[in-house]
Image (cartoon, rainbow, N blue to C red; front, side):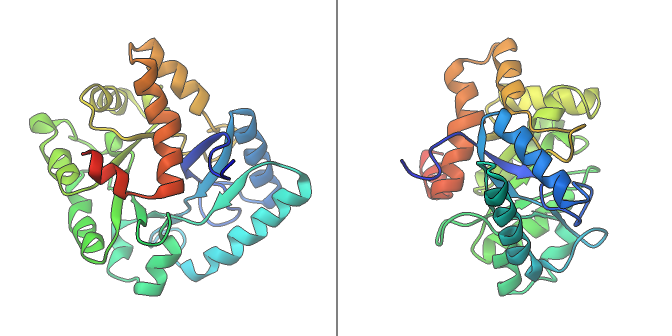
Length: 252
């Protein structure tokens, strides 16, 4: 069996210790990994906040991911952590080619970067997205439902961005209303309008835990078909991690 086929995959998960508002210590990271296993996840893309007010030394990421994987193996926790980041638009113009490779995910020739749009508006990420595309990367937008006004004019900005090849990730916590009613309504509408490609936990701590199983249940309770829910929660994220982005572009 391919190493990516067993279990679910998380494409937005703050699991590296001591780099952002996720786990502060290695022990807290290990506890998050155990919770992910209980949730059915076996592959996690580590997505620390890479932006001016959090973590900027991206060349440390390969070492930090290797260190965490070594501890996971030592503890017998069956989770594989892959290198990635949640990139702030403010950093895009700062990072050179080698630095971008440190924050990108996916196999060679099919790499993608998780880009965090501002909560004030998706517009604040559009120039950064265009620059990343020009530099050869596909963008996965992190939780666009949390950007104010995302539903304006029939989601015009988001639709234009998706038409350019961007993919969209919705957070389970938004779907459950943990970020307020506006984000919850937006998450539901984006899924109903088929403007979402993936669901992820955006886990940070035991208080904001891995929740793909809960997300699957919530989608079904809201009337999504099993096939659609499985695509958002299981097959879509797993395929993105294993094969990268060309298949999504071909299916668009």
